[in-house]
Image (cartoon, rainbow over all chains, first blue to last red; front, side, top):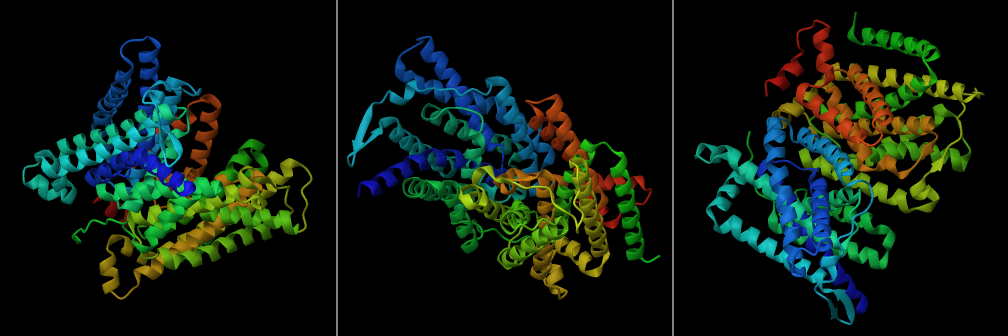
Length: 299
Length: 325
């Protein structure tokens, strides 16, 4: 019973940040048709920026402790605004006429470059931003002790999901984005500024990656290599859920989170293995993921 | 002269030239070239796949199959004949490829890429954790023999592996060229262009992609076994996604118009890597990424298009069709 609860809660916590990161990846794929390998690096940039900002904020006793969370949020925003438009307009735009796979390779090159850029800026030593982690105290559930921050993360993921859903389905901008996802050419013909939607969606995707990074930074030691682990996981989440599907990303994040925490509790050596096993199984049964988009076949 | 005869003659000339060059060139270059050719063979397999419009991000699974088949045979059975080990590596990868091919033949585009990636990551997970396979550290191989010839010095060993790799390279390249120009090979290009049309004309796209997948597996296995012999060490990184990504990189860099371009690209990349790791030890990955970006940006059809243009030929049909997109 205790074990089941532990697996469930750990899985839920794991799923929360995974969802935030993966939904950014899936949104970018939906709108721009890019499977962004550099998404993990953007997560890492968010984590590093937040860790530095948090270190500066608490180190200098700048303001009240709880405002540290807003510092983390601001860090994610800064990364998104600095990187998003630059990357989309400056680079990715040049490759839109090319094959999907070429674009994957372009972002792979970006991943390599960003990895080294991160090392140049922050060095190779780990950063810790532990202050915000303990701020909310501890909670006890089913006789298990958890840091309350972990559940705040679950709340943040829920909030992100709900806001994203509302934003996409209940606002004009959201509807325009959905229209571009559905058919970029027809949307363009109807007067939608597709380029603007691209910049907007990509920047928002970067923001989600950086947000995931910024709010996991207090839980982990921020060091080189985190981007690879994250991209491999969120990649699996997105593929399991169905590329471009927000609901799919939520369900898949839960599946991956639970599978991973089950593996960690029951069979630690299978941690990464199990994620890809689930992915292969899902793909074998439903090639386009759990929530596949129905698209008209164009000839 | 018939096309296949000309190709075979060119292959023979290349092989003789390589064998002679290997004697003259410095030892470090021979090592780099061996590894480049071994990886080039894998990338050649990817080019075969790319011709029918498929890109696998998981060639690592066959690469590591070939390497581990060779390595484990040497370690557990005590066989150390390089030729035999290479053939065995290729054979086992081919068998695995034939098993997986029917599962994958129905997938296209990004789904094919991600599914192959998943399979190779599962292989990585297994290799990383199973201790009798060497675990995460892998294991070392001792120097192989070659049909009764036991090279004495390390230089002789690396030269012998180089000759073996060159032989595998020219044979694979020549066979691929002949295949590409054959009716069966051209069918791949047709499937890449328009699958529905090919199906209506009475050919099976599934069959074409399945066969291409098996060929790619065979070549990746051979390349894996040769890399393992040349490096003298095997670890799970052979199956890691960065390894697979490197092969995709090579294949895109060379393009699918020319077979020679694959190996030229492979040598260039291997040189760029060893130079940049020497001169920018902390940023060589970034340098490689920048190089990749520049190539994709300025050479959309890969190095192969460059070779074709320089030869004074009008751009071949395939290259033109691609740039017209």
